[in-house]
Amino acid sequence: MRIFVTGATGQLGHEIPSAFAGHDIIPGIRPSFDLVDERSVRSAIEAAGPDLVIHAAAYTDVDGCEGDPERAFRVNALGTRYVALAARDVGAALVVVSTDYVFDGTKGEPYLEWDEPRPLNIYGRSKLAGEREALMLHGRCYIVRTSWVFSPNGRNFVKTMLRLGRERTALQVVDDERSSPTLAGDLAGAIARLVARPVYGIYHLSNAGSCSRYEFARETIQLAGLPTVVTPVSTAEYVARNPLPARRPANSTLRNLAGAALGIELPPWRDALRRFLETHHL
Image 1 (tube, helix red, strand yellow):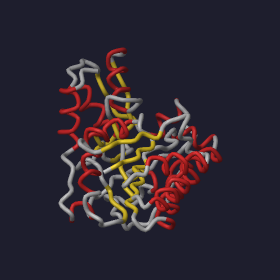
Image 2 (cartoon, helix red, strand yellow):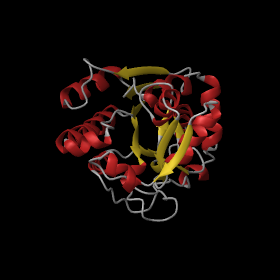
Image 3 (cartoon, one colour):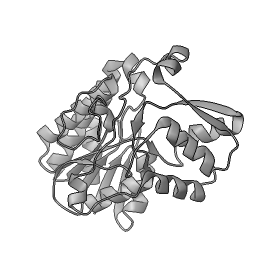
């Protein structure tokens, strides 16, 4: 296949070539590709002539989105509209990568693909708007929601914990925010398996299991062999000292039911974290 990838320099984008080895990967990158410019998007996708478009580009700064809603919707909603229309018009299937933050985290158990989204913040609202644009405009569309992505590329929670663990003797991390950490390489591999089947719709693809931010940080520090002491703190206590513009869902764990029905399941998050730390000595 010829595969056009937006966000090719991001965490997931970096893993797409390995997951789709043997296929022709065309990255959508500036200046030839500008997500918020409809003509630029259409021109780049038409020139690539892809069989598949993987739309992984997004404005993912959760607090930044809260401070600039217009930019969030311009990138995450309108940009997705442009990509969906261009992909449809060239006859390419479409994967839109979305987020657990489309949910408010109050369900008390993992979210299924059919649960009603109720985002708490602008980031989640703008990503949900992008999902709806894609599903409305493109009949051959996969929506892939994922959560807490980490990789050796870019900024992410694991790399931040490793850096702080080397700088400090003690860390406090919130213990009442819960989801499923997801290794970008595992996610890319799951997407490769998914698009081999023309079963379009919404999928939840995260590494299996869930944890709090505190448990995630503690496991990271322990597996890395660092002596740093990690202790739990509530979100209310943390925000009192470090104000954050955007609210986060308390438990946005995703349940992979639709993908599992096709035989697509990701390994446990602890296994993914261990493999990551053994492979990348960051």
